[in-house]
Length: 181
Image (cartoon, rainbow, N blue to C red; front, side, top):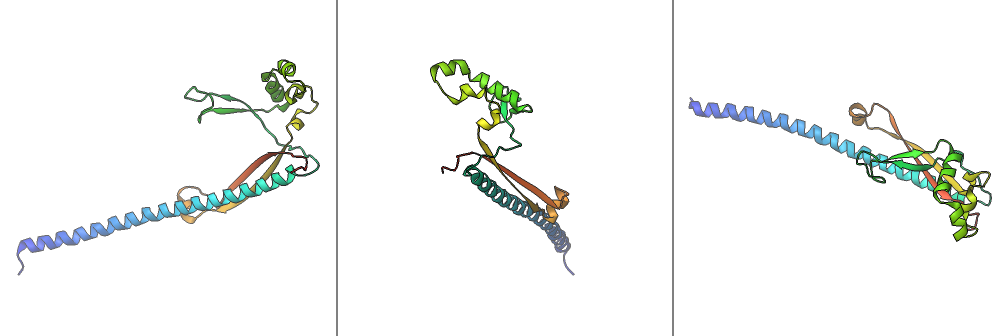
């Protein structure tokens, strides 16, 4: 017969190793979820890089064209509303996006004081901007756009985003160079 303290210790050892197995299983599951999240972030980063390169290539091609084509969906941030920290131009600010581009352009021109600017710098672009029939064309912006669908991993789909794919879109804006570059 074994002494009673050995039996007690062997039972403790068996239950202790069972607890360690459960802890190991839980830790492995958490580690696998973290690794899957990192892989998903890597795939999204790669998709964003590819779409940004494609959007820039499209904008560059339009910027070097001999004929200017106005971007139809140009939107302007013409002001900022201070966020919760009450300081303008910080990370929590909210942009005021122009819904009426003509009025937004006039607001921008008014902030430049075109009459005073024309007196100091004759023939500058901002002074004549307010009298232009289509002020949007005066900025000569061209746009490139690209999108890609990135498949979600099964673990991420189950835990975070119940979608088969995540859409990644990129826009790039350049100034038209009239084919001189």
